[in-house]
Image 1: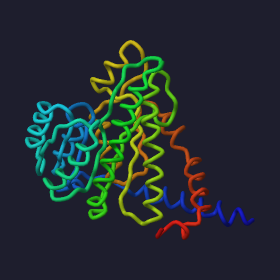
Image 2 (image 1 turned 180 degrees about the horizontal axis):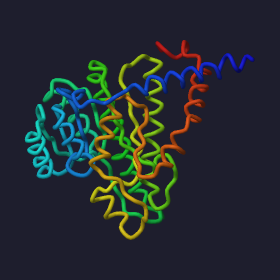
Image 3 (image 1 turned 135 degrees about the vertical axis):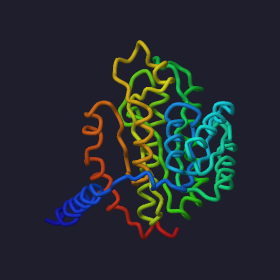
Image 4 (image 1 turned 120 degrees about the horizontal axis):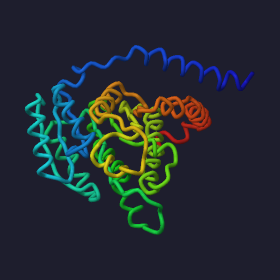
Length: 292
């Protein structure tokens, strides 16, 4: 009976409230009108499509990627599509100093920040892992550590605007996949860090949402080239994927699953982990931590 009162009833109430209120959420494009948004990895693929969607919705955007020429083309198109403003700053996310300076400059260009979309990634060729420690290091730095640096730098602005962070991850960050060990490791790290950070925000009443975007195979040029002749699964359209990321982030969802297979959401989006996280959180004596 004590266990029922302490854990099961609160858990049931939390999930009933979640499903009741989330069912009433409805995305509207005008929610992005005038919002100030950063998109990384925006020169091609999903990032470019997100920039175009945001432009059509009337958002301010600052875009980054490595290619100056490609970014300029995307910015020009964003302005044609109706962006409130559009700027680009080219750079390499392997340089953490650039990552910090980029966020600061983007904030100055837009006069603040409402949404940080972390989308850049280091792709590695599919193959068995042997002894290439350098590729593991680079994967962790670009796919994980730079995400942390960008988020921490942006956090003061996001706290002020009660904004949102979108962390673009992968099914390979939830379930082990062969042939992509360094990539998969970096995506698992994103889940561990940002899901823990979300819990800390909740305890400390930090009104900044974190949406972990768990993607399956998407038909970007890079992904199609990397998996050609090796992977037999179907790829989802990048345009729709980009829109779903924006929707989930605006609606402040904890996790978003986007994959051609209906089984991905069903099997990975089950409440088991949430229940364990809830029980673990209840065991912590927060009064000993908060304020120290």
